[in-house]
Image (cartoon, rainbow, N blue to C red; front, side):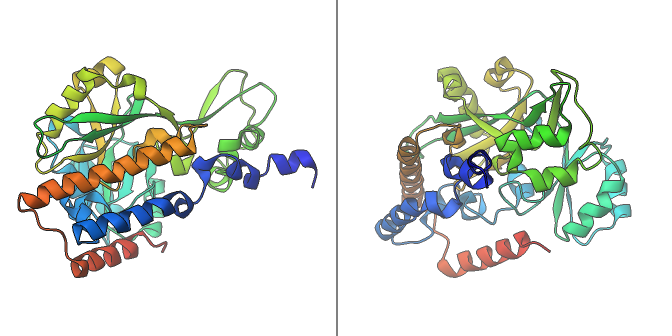
Length: 347
Protein backbone atom coordinates (compact mmCIF):
# COMPACT_ATOMS: atom_id res chain seq x y z
CA UNK A 1 0.00 0.00 0.00
CA UNK A 2 1.38 3.43 -0.97
CA UNK A 3 1.80 6.14 1.68
CA UNK A 4 -0.85 8.31 0.00
CA UNK A 5 -3.35 5.48 -0.02
CA UNK A 6 -2.60 4.66 3.64
CA UNK A 7 -2.92 8.32 4.66
CA UNK A 8 -6.33 8.51 3.00
CA UNK A 9 -7.54 5.18 4.37
CA UNK A 10 -10.64 4.98 6.57
CA UNK A 11 -8.44 3.86 9.48
CA UNK A 12 -6.33 7.03 9.39
CA UNK A 13 -9.36 9.27 8.81
CA UNK A 14 -10.95 7.87 11.97
CA UNK A 15 -7.74 7.77 13.98
CA UNK A 16 -6.89 11.43 13.40
CA UNK A 17 -10.37 12.82 14.17
CA UNK A 18 -11.78 11.80 17.56
CA UNK A 19 -15.34 12.55 16.42
CA UNK A 20 -15.18 9.18 14.62
CA UNK A 21 -13.78 7.17 17.52
CA UNK A 22 -15.87 4.28 18.89
CA UNK A 23 -18.51 5.38 21.36
CA UNK A 24 -17.02 3.37 24.24
CA UNK A 25 -13.58 4.99 24.05
CA UNK A 26 -14.86 8.54 24.47
CA UNK A 27 -17.48 7.53 27.03
CA UNK A 28 -15.23 5.43 29.31
CA UNK A 29 -14.14 8.30 31.62
CA UNK A 30 -17.79 9.35 31.85
CA UNK A 31 -18.75 5.79 32.78
CA UNK A 32 -16.48 6.07 35.83
CA UNK A 33 -18.03 9.42 36.70
CA UNK A 34 -21.54 7.96 36.32
CA UNK A 35 -20.63 5.22 38.81
CA UNK A 36 -19.45 7.86 41.29
CA UNK A 37 -22.65 9.87 40.84
CA UNK A 38 -24.70 6.67 41.23
CA UNK A 39 -23.01 6.00 44.57
CA UNK A 40 -23.86 9.52 45.70
CA UNK A 41 -27.47 9.13 44.56
CA UNK A 42 -27.70 5.51 45.78
CA UNK A 43 -29.23 4.57 42.45
CA UNK A 44 -27.72 3.41 39.17
CA UNK A 45 -30.69 4.95 37.40
CA UNK A 46 -30.74 8.31 39.16
CA UNK A 47 -30.94 10.00 35.73
CA UNK A 48 -34.51 8.70 35.36
CA UNK A 49 -35.66 11.64 37.51
CA UNK A 50 -34.14 14.25 35.19
CA UNK A 51 -37.27 14.34 32.98
CA UNK A 52 -40.03 12.68 35.03
CA UNK A 53 -42.56 12.32 32.19
CA UNK A 54 -40.10 10.55 29.86
CA UNK A 55 -39.08 6.91 30.31
CA UNK A 56 -35.71 6.82 32.12
CA UNK A 57 -35.53 10.58 31.65
CA UNK A 58 -34.77 9.94 27.98
CA UNK A 59 -31.53 8.00 28.49
CA UNK A 60 -32.81 5.11 26.36
CA UNK A 61 -35.96 3.10 25.70
CA UNK A 62 -38.39 6.00 25.35
CA UNK A 63 -41.05 6.04 22.64
CA UNK A 64 -40.42 8.89 20.19
CA UNK A 65 -44.16 9.08 19.64
CA UNK A 66 -44.92 9.40 23.35
CA UNK A 67 -42.33 12.16 23.75
CA UNK A 68 -43.65 14.08 20.73
CA UNK A 69 -47.13 13.90 22.26
CA UNK A 70 -45.84 16.02 25.14
CA UNK A 71 -45.07 18.89 22.73
CA UNK A 72 -47.75 21.40 21.65
CA UNK A 73 -48.90 20.70 18.08
CA UNK A 74 -47.79 24.07 16.70
CA UNK A 75 -44.14 23.17 17.27
CA UNK A 76 -44.01 19.79 15.55
CA UNK A 77 -44.53 18.24 12.11
CA UNK A 78 -47.44 15.93 11.42
CA UNK A 79 -46.50 12.51 12.80
CA UNK A 80 -48.36 9.17 12.93
CA UNK A 81 -47.44 5.93 14.68
CA UNK A 82 -47.63 2.70 12.65
CA UNK A 83 -47.95 -0.43 14.77
CA UNK A 84 -46.19 -3.61 13.68
CA UNK A 85 -46.85 -5.78 11.85
CA UNK A 86 -47.96 -3.55 8.98
CA UNK A 87 -48.39 -4.11 5.27
CA UNK A 88 -47.73 -1.73 2.40
CA UNK A 89 -51.51 -1.37 2.02
CA UNK A 90 -51.79 -0.37 5.71
CA UNK A 91 -49.13 2.29 5.24
CA UNK A 92 -50.64 3.67 2.02
CA UNK A 93 -54.06 3.85 3.69
CA UNK A 94 -52.51 5.79 6.59
CA UNK A 95 -50.75 8.18 4.22
CA UNK A 96 -54.04 8.91 2.45
CA UNK A 97 -56.08 9.15 5.66
CA UNK A 98 -53.74 11.73 7.20
CA UNK A 99 -53.13 13.59 3.94
CA UNK A 100 -49.39 12.92 3.78
CA UNK A 101 -47.55 13.69 0.55
CA UNK A 102 -44.29 12.00 -0.45
CA UNK A 103 -41.53 12.41 0.47
CA UNK A 104 -41.98 11.55 4.14
CA UNK A 105 -39.68 10.31 6.89
CA UNK A 106 -39.94 6.81 8.35
CA UNK A 107 -38.21 6.21 11.68
CA UNK A 108 -38.44 3.52 14.39
CA UNK A 109 -40.44 4.45 17.47
CA UNK A 110 -37.56 3.05 19.55
CA UNK A 111 -34.11 3.85 18.21
CA UNK A 112 -31.10 6.12 18.33
CA UNK A 113 -28.19 7.47 16.27
CA UNK A 114 -30.13 7.48 13.01
CA UNK A 115 -30.99 3.78 13.15
CA UNK A 116 -33.36 3.00 10.26
CA UNK A 117 -34.33 6.63 9.68
CA UNK A 118 -35.20 6.85 5.99
CA UNK A 119 -36.55 9.42 3.60
CA UNK A 120 -39.29 7.72 1.59
CA UNK A 121 -39.77 9.41 -1.76
CA UNK A 122 -41.51 6.65 -3.73
CA UNK A 123 -44.19 4.08 -2.90
CA UNK A 124 -41.81 1.35 -4.08
CA UNK A 125 -39.54 2.09 -1.07
CA UNK A 126 -42.24 1.29 1.47
CA UNK A 127 -42.16 -2.50 1.04
CA UNK A 128 -38.38 -2.55 1.34
CA UNK A 129 -38.57 -0.58 4.59
CA UNK A 130 -41.19 -2.90 6.05
CA UNK A 131 -38.98 -5.85 5.15
CA UNK A 132 -36.07 -4.29 7.05
CA UNK A 133 -37.99 -3.20 10.14
CA UNK A 134 -40.78 -5.28 11.60
CA UNK A 135 -41.23 -2.88 14.53
CA UNK A 136 -43.45 0.07 15.39
CA UNK A 137 -42.37 3.13 13.42
CA UNK A 138 -43.33 6.72 12.78
CA UNK A 139 -44.37 8.41 9.58
CA UNK A 140 -43.35 12.03 9.83
CA UNK A 141 -43.95 14.92 7.49
CA UNK A 142 -40.76 15.78 5.57
CA UNK A 143 -39.81 19.33 6.43
CA UNK A 144 -38.46 21.28 3.48
CA UNK A 145 -36.95 23.95 5.72
CA UNK A 146 -33.36 25.04 5.05
CA UNK A 147 -31.88 25.08 8.56
CA UNK A 148 -31.54 22.03 10.83
CA UNK A 149 -30.27 22.48 14.37
CA UNK A 150 -29.87 20.71 17.67
CA UNK A 151 -30.66 23.03 20.59
CA UNK A 152 -29.84 21.82 24.10
CA UNK A 153 -31.90 23.19 26.97
CA UNK A 154 -31.18 22.98 30.71
CA UNK A 155 -33.41 24.05 33.61
CA UNK A 156 -32.86 23.26 37.26
CA UNK A 157 -36.16 22.51 39.09
CA UNK A 158 -35.19 24.87 41.93
CA UNK A 159 -34.76 27.76 39.49
CA UNK A 160 -37.46 29.66 37.66
CA UNK A 161 -35.77 29.92 34.28
CA UNK A 162 -33.68 27.68 32.07
CA UNK A 163 -31.01 28.30 29.46
CA UNK A 164 -29.86 27.08 26.07
CA UNK A 165 -26.46 25.48 26.74
CA UNK A 166 -25.53 24.14 23.29
CA UNK A 167 -26.44 24.69 19.66
CA UNK A 168 -25.26 22.51 16.80
CA UNK A 169 -25.83 23.41 13.15
CA UNK A 170 -26.29 20.34 10.96
CA UNK A 171 -24.54 20.52 7.61
CA UNK A 172 -25.88 17.70 5.45
CA UNK A 173 -23.49 15.41 3.62
CA UNK A 174 -22.95 16.75 0.11
CA UNK A 175 -20.42 16.71 -2.70
CA UNK A 176 -19.82 19.45 -5.26
CA UNK A 177 -19.30 18.69 -8.95
CA UNK A 178 -16.18 19.74 -10.84
CA UNK A 179 -17.41 18.91 -14.35
CA UNK A 180 -14.97 15.99 -14.67
CA UNK A 181 -15.48 13.52 -11.80
CA UNK A 182 -18.40 11.15 -11.53
CA UNK A 183 -20.40 10.80 -8.33
CA UNK A 184 -18.43 7.77 -7.11
CA UNK A 185 -15.14 9.61 -7.53
CA UNK A 186 -16.48 12.65 -5.70
CA UNK A 187 -17.68 10.50 -2.79
CA UNK A 188 -14.39 8.65 -2.45
CA UNK A 189 -12.40 11.92 -2.61
CA UNK A 190 -14.25 13.39 0.39
CA UNK A 191 -13.17 11.77 3.71
CA UNK A 192 -16.52 12.24 5.47
CA UNK A 193 -18.39 10.75 2.51
CA UNK A 194 -15.82 7.99 1.98
CA UNK A 195 -16.56 6.64 5.47
CA UNK A 196 -20.19 6.22 4.37
CA UNK A 197 -19.32 4.52 1.09
CA UNK A 198 -21.25 1.21 1.48
CA UNK A 199 -24.48 3.02 2.39
CA UNK A 200 -24.03 5.70 -0.25
CA UNK A 201 -23.13 3.18 -2.97
CA UNK A 202 -26.40 1.39 -2.26
CA UNK A 203 -28.49 4.56 -1.99
CA UNK A 204 -27.14 6.13 -5.20
CA UNK A 205 -26.32 3.03 -7.23
CA UNK A 206 -28.09 4.39 -10.33
CA UNK A 207 -26.14 7.68 -10.28
CA UNK A 208 -22.58 6.65 -9.43
CA UNK A 209 -21.29 7.07 -12.98
CA UNK A 210 -22.99 10.44 -13.51
CA UNK A 211 -20.66 13.42 -13.89
CA UNK A 212 -21.82 16.44 -11.88
CA UNK A 213 -21.53 19.87 -13.55
CA UNK A 214 -18.97 22.22 -12.01
CA UNK A 215 -20.35 23.93 -8.91
CA UNK A 216 -23.44 21.73 -8.61
CA UNK A 217 -24.11 20.48 -5.09
CA UNK A 218 -25.50 16.98 -4.63
CA UNK A 219 -27.06 15.97 -1.31
CA UNK A 220 -25.89 12.46 -0.42
CA UNK A 221 -27.96 12.09 2.74
CA UNK A 222 -30.78 14.37 3.90
CA UNK A 223 -30.98 12.85 7.41
CA UNK A 224 -29.21 15.11 9.90
CA UNK A 225 -27.36 12.49 11.94
CA UNK A 226 -23.63 12.41 12.68
CA UNK A 227 -23.46 8.65 12.20
CA UNK A 228 -24.82 9.14 8.66
CA UNK A 229 -22.16 11.67 7.68
CA UNK A 230 -23.71 14.99 8.69
CA UNK A 231 -21.15 17.57 9.80
CA UNK A 232 -21.96 18.96 13.23
CA UNK A 233 -20.98 22.63 13.29
CA UNK A 234 -20.55 24.52 16.57
CA UNK A 235 -23.39 27.03 16.81
CA UNK A 236 -22.55 28.51 20.23
CA UNK A 237 -22.42 31.97 18.65
CA UNK A 238 -26.23 31.78 18.30
CA UNK A 239 -26.77 31.47 22.07
CA UNK A 240 -28.01 34.62 23.76
CA UNK A 241 -30.65 35.72 26.24
CA UNK A 242 -33.31 35.88 23.53
CA UNK A 243 -32.73 32.29 22.44
CA UNK A 244 -32.76 31.01 26.03
CA UNK A 245 -35.99 32.88 26.74
CA UNK A 246 -37.66 31.45 23.61
CA UNK A 247 -36.78 27.88 24.55
CA UNK A 248 -37.70 28.50 28.17
CA UNK A 249 -41.21 29.42 27.02
CA UNK A 250 -41.44 26.32 24.79
CA UNK A 251 -39.95 23.97 27.39
CA UNK A 252 -42.29 25.06 30.16
CA UNK A 253 -45.19 23.94 27.97
CA UNK A 254 -43.78 20.38 28.02
CA UNK A 255 -44.81 18.73 31.26
CA UNK A 256 -41.90 17.29 33.25
CA UNK A 257 -39.15 18.34 30.83
CA UNK A 258 -35.95 19.91 32.21
CA UNK A 259 -32.99 18.69 30.24
CA UNK A 260 -32.45 17.61 26.66
CA UNK A 261 -31.92 18.46 23.02
CA UNK A 262 -34.46 19.67 20.50
CA UNK A 263 -33.73 18.42 16.97
CA UNK A 264 -35.54 20.91 14.79
CA UNK A 265 -35.83 22.71 11.49
CA UNK A 266 -36.63 26.35 10.81
CA UNK A 267 -36.77 28.77 7.90
CA UNK A 268 -34.17 31.21 9.25
CA UNK A 269 -32.20 32.15 12.33
CA UNK A 270 -34.69 34.91 13.00
CA UNK A 271 -37.47 32.29 12.93
CA UNK A 272 -35.45 30.30 15.48
CA UNK A 273 -35.31 33.28 17.85
CA UNK A 274 -39.04 33.85 17.34
CA UNK A 275 -39.81 30.22 18.23
CA UNK A 276 -41.19 29.57 14.75
CA UNK A 277 -39.75 26.06 14.62
CA UNK A 278 -40.69 22.47 13.90
CA UNK A 279 -39.38 19.91 16.40
CA UNK A 280 -38.68 16.56 14.72
CA UNK A 281 -37.50 14.92 17.95
CA UNK A 282 -37.02 15.83 21.58
CA UNK A 283 -34.22 13.83 23.17
CA UNK A 284 -33.90 13.71 26.95
CA UNK A 285 -30.89 13.12 29.18
CA UNK A 286 -29.40 10.55 26.78
CA UNK A 287 -28.75 13.31 24.24
CA UNK A 288 -25.41 15.06 24.03
CA UNK A 289 -24.46 18.72 23.55
CA UNK A 290 -23.61 17.84 19.96
CA UNK A 291 -21.58 20.98 19.14
CA UNK A 292 -18.56 19.13 20.59
CA UNK A 293 -18.43 17.08 17.37
CA UNK A 294 -17.44 20.13 15.34
CA UNK A 295 -14.44 19.05 13.21
CA UNK A 296 -11.24 19.88 15.09
CA UNK A 297 -12.98 20.54 18.42
CA UNK A 298 -10.60 19.89 21.32
CA UNK A 299 -11.09 16.46 22.89
CA UNK A 300 -10.12 17.82 26.32
CA UNK A 301 -12.60 20.66 26.01
CA UNK A 302 -15.25 18.13 24.94
CA UNK A 303 -14.53 16.05 28.05
CA UNK A 304 -15.00 19.14 30.22
CA UNK A 305 -18.38 19.82 28.59
CA UNK A 306 -19.49 16.19 28.96
CA UNK A 307 -18.52 16.06 32.63
CA UNK A 308 -20.53 19.24 33.21
CA UNK A 309 -23.36 17.63 31.24
CA UNK A 310 -23.43 14.64 33.63
CA UNK A 311 -23.12 16.90 36.66
CA UNK A 312 -26.23 18.75 35.48
CA UNK A 313 -28.12 15.47 35.00
CA UNK A 314 -27.22 14.56 38.58
CA UNK A 315 -28.21 17.94 40.06
CA UNK A 316 -31.54 18.08 38.19
CA UNK A 317 -32.35 14.48 39.10
CA UNK A 318 -31.54 15.00 42.78
CA UNK A 319 -33.61 18.18 42.95
CA UNK A 320 -36.57 16.36 41.39
CA UNK A 321 -36.01 13.39 43.72
CA UNK A 322 -36.21 15.66 46.76
CA UNK A 323 -39.53 16.88 45.34
CA UNK A 324 -40.88 13.35 45.44
CA UNK A 325 -39.89 11.94 42.02
CA UNK A 326 -38.83 8.32 42.49
CA UNK A 327 -35.84 6.83 40.68
CA UNK A 328 -36.69 3.98 38.31
CA UNK A 329 -35.90 0.66 39.98
CA UNK A 330 -33.07 -1.53 38.70
CA UNK A 331 -35.54 -4.30 37.80
CA UNK A 332 -37.75 -1.96 35.77
CA UNK A 333 -34.71 -0.39 34.10
CA UNK A 334 -33.44 -3.83 33.12
CA UNK A 335 -36.76 -4.62 31.44
CA UNK A 336 -36.75 -1.31 29.58
CA UNK A 337 -33.19 -1.94 28.38
CA UNK A 338 -34.06 -5.46 27.20
CA UNK A 339 -37.02 -4.16 25.20
CA UNK A 340 -34.90 -1.34 23.76
CA UNK A 341 -32.12 -3.71 22.62
CA UNK A 342 -34.61 -6.07 21.02
CA UNK A 343 -36.15 -3.15 19.12
CA UNK A 344 -32.81 -1.90 17.80
CA UNK A 345 -31.21 -5.22 16.84
CA UNK A 346 -30.86 -5.75 13.07
CA UNK A 347 -33.47 -8.16 11.71
